[in-house]
Length: 135
Image (cartoon, rainbow, N blue to C red; front, side, top):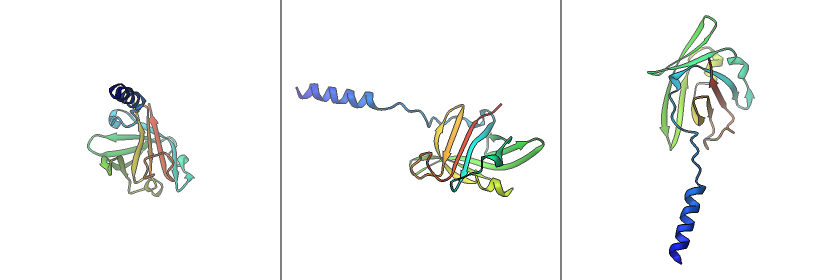
């Protein structure tokens, strides 16, 4: 009888575990990205990044292009305290320094990349940066 209950409990635990693949370590350099949401200290600053296409280049270079203007920065992916983080660094202009941060990756797929400053790794941090795959 004990064996039966152990099997039932084991099956319940196994099947109730989610196969959530929100952190699948996609190759962000496969295509360009556009900002769909950006908040800093709770304030929506998404408009600052309108029409920019972001390219995460292999080797750690990050470019943001709008028209003929190119802004260069750096990026890297790390594991820190059991969280996967995407570190973004821009020196100029000022509004690009607003997204220079070590972001916790909340969700990533080939279509979306959701980042947060929240220590819990949830999208409810004061600072949020969301991208979607661009053309």
